[in-house]
Image (cartoon, rainbow, N blue to C red; front, side, top):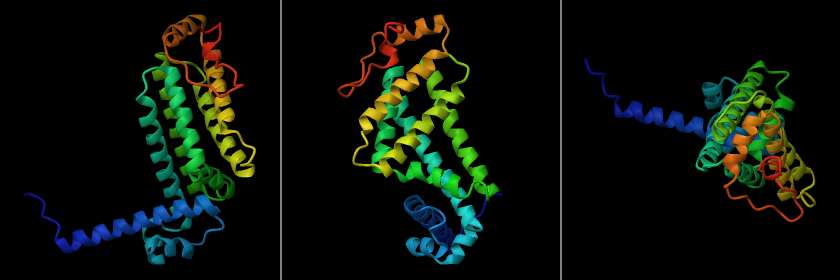
Length: 242
């Protein structure tokens, strides 16, 4: 027997319930990212979202449950966005350049996406197993996506790429913190030029001589990304590599 069609009244109610959930998530992303978790009250979140407090408890159980859902949402959309930008490029150097540009843009225009996981880790990871588990899932997915992207770019696997991915995420967070603390004197171009250099060095250092030769062959004809004045050449353009 075919399933019954949902009555229009029930379908409309379901849509309103889902809309309330989305409003809460968007409000929490904005407020947690701007003020931090502890400084944001349930009342402020609900007022910003334009929903009753009961909606928050219905969908997420409590404020910690909302934070965990926010981390999953932010992490998932951030990873997907980066993958779309990077995988469109054919070569490893161009992919790294696109990743660098995408991360620089996030730090400049949407710093809350970077600050929110850091804030959650500092404020709630120790006290809340639910938030700690959400952070572990998000960061694990981010590292796995970076490892997959590196291996896909190279065409071969390397040992220790999870540590490289961890370093990449740490450098991104450091850039966001530096810009927040000292925006006037922070040179993001120089910071992300060093980011590219560090990533190339870390990856190339793990290659065998044969893998290094293959890497040099793949990037030999690839256009080099522009560097800011005074920046050192990436490791991939050194005599050892090319």
